[in-house]
Amino acid sequence: MAKNPFACGDCHLVLADGVDQCTRCPSAQVSSDWQGYVIIMDPERSEIAKRLNVEHPGKYALKVNTR
Ligand SMILES: [Zn+2]
Image (cartoon, rainbow, N blue to C red; front, side, top):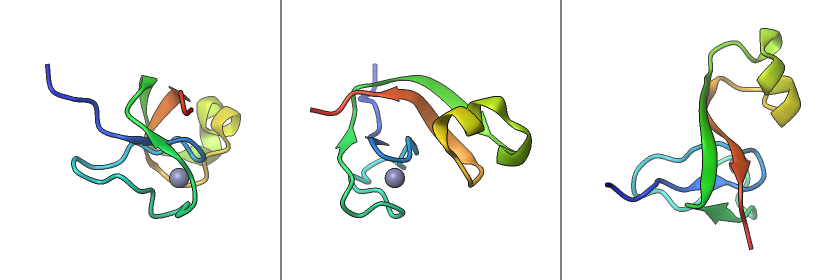
């Protein structure tokens, strides 16, 4: 199985392959240890987006484990 991409510990954004820093949160920790892949198309209408405080459409992880 391929290695997980990184996800941002702050905004939960799942980063592209080979990217190890969130463009929205330059100081946030990233982790490849995360669970629950969700694609949010319309944050305004998404309960998950509200829960994660997501304001932009994209691919997100429900839970990101940072150390
Ligand atoms: Zn981020």
